[in-house]
Image (cartoon, rainbow over all chains, first blue to last red; front, side, top):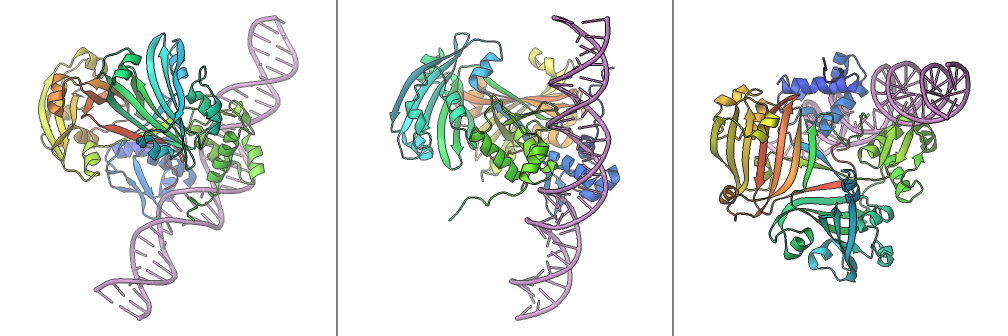
Length: 243
Length: 243
DNA sequence: CATGTGATTATGTCTATACATATTCCAACG
DNA sequence: CGTTGGAATATGTATAGACATAATCACATG
């Protein structure tokens, strides 16, 4: 009875049919598929509709498109996943847990060389804090904020509002770099996160920029057991389509 | 001299101008922005062009759109990153390193309960293998393949072609789940990856499906030092736009 | 006051047409 | 033979108009 989903209409129907042909090996990897005009004629729709469907498939990494050269089935499809990195407070509260934030330290200093390489040579604000869920340590935040880019941060205490949320409101970024890795807990990590030295921690490094000026670099060390979940395929998330 | 980029035209110009107004707090978080018709009039373009720009911003998590309710600036912008999980062989070769694949074990068996929960009750093929880069162990793959969904896998030896690549070619998936986490190396992990027991390993769990039938579940344990890099913001990756 | 129902409205999508732009291909030329 | 320049072509994008759909809001009704 539950057929799962009604047969899609419009550009999604074309999306699905093209995907079916790729999976069925009608169009094997590397194959150049018919051009938009021909597909539009075949499907009995406007070229813009075909364009929408093929553009979505290209966004999923299934197709590769180049002007004049045409559209071909990707030779090496990658798993393209969209990961939502939420604000920590919301991440905790949405699971129905109590959120606590505790500022550990705050002060201006000359950042270490590795941080200076991205933040620039000037003085920076160093903020460390602990976020916890239902009283249990959740993530240890170690952040440097560029006082060149965000001078207003110098007069902010960050005792009740986390630096992340303050920055989101006051210094929005245009883009950023993120890296996920696994690190062994240092003595300090371990003490704060209530685990043993050397425990495997999921760590996110993130640097955000306002155009070409670095705003902040942060290391987020999550308590053991943390995992990031996401999905691939289906209707591509993050493309703003559908509901 | 290098101005960085030429001023964008068309829908990207609208995208950028809307983003500027959000950053400038002309339109603060929660604010309902003008509707597409009004914006089109203001920018002197067609509504479809505004739609394209706003749809892109919604895909980036900056805007939230609902029919009739209109378009509002997101209250809690999330960092929406698109992560490309490439085929391991390519990941290594694209860095100019030599890729080696070694099958460790292969056999049909009754998977453990945790795996059965997703793969289903039937027998499954268990494949373990080691991928290495320039002779150094890179990732340890521990995979279960559903013989219900992919009966052809039973007669495949996987000695020279990795199970991942064989599956990509023979049993394409429609969607999948991915989880990133940090785990302590087991004795076996440590021996294979040439590290110590308890070392922090970056681990990817991935399950892929063909519609509602699970194809395979794999645990990929990367040698210490591995990290996944990605970016957020800018022109949204994975939306298939631009070149 | 609670509730249901229909008008209203903003977004979602499609069509047909047009022009822009990147790339390829081929032919002419040195 | 190599190089260059233009024609051909497929995608990228814009436009105006139209209808579809979902959600809200106001109003009438019990």
